[in-house]
Length: 375
Image (cartoon, rainbow, N blue to C red; front, top):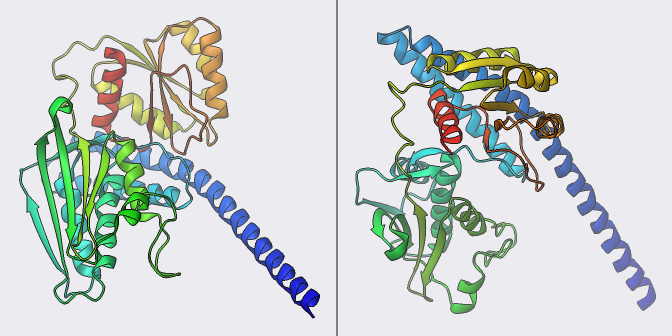
């Protein structure tokens, strides 16, 4: 009987292991599919955003407002793709741009108030008019959402549940001015042993089925990616306070208006719409711009000797890498700014002077080009 029971247990364990393997394989397939969809979809969005920018320059009044709304909608679509890639756990490049943390906080508070138990009182304290951080807007908003969810779950059973969010600018000694985000609750609090593990992936004190253990580890990872860190203050029965520190954005890279932009640029993209609109945007800023498909990049680069190549990558980046290697092998000293509509894995690009992800708003495109050329 004992032997039979052991065999049944072994059979159940093998069956569970097979099910987990199949689930992992399905998630991997979803991730690969999402990567391909993201690349193609972001290529389309890049063409849309570029054309909206060009059209807006020749319009005014109500039509201009409509184009502004269309651009905002396009960037929201890009955020949706980014969230899909996060779900698929792909190493997605960040869309770096100046983001007001106060705006991200207000949007997250609005979501929390609309979805949390109405008995939870959420208090906002914004001790500055603006708090600009250079980074990914979607990821930065995810910090607030994850902290709010963590605080909400700690309030279970409280008579007067409260969450307080505080955003301010602080002087942090040798590190200078930083953005400081604090989300505080009056929940159950944590003991020392729990505090030591809260940022570990998959660690959770919640019952099975109530949490993944990824919320605070995601906050920690996003903060690190943006050059910051996270602190925790808590004690059993006394609530918790999670504090995120992030570097403030360095304002601009110099005034481009009226500047003599004599650099020669080569735009390389197999999508004709993206190639054409990118060329037009750059030409309007005074650059001398050439454009070609990926297969022609070496020939055109040798002939025109550009100061900067804006190089598109294919879905897996292999075609772009091959072109990049040949450019360097031919001895061309041109700078290279790599673009991708998809994702780049653990293997990092070498031989490039910058990497950005599509769709890229025209002003950010100009900023990135100017930044690479100035270095």
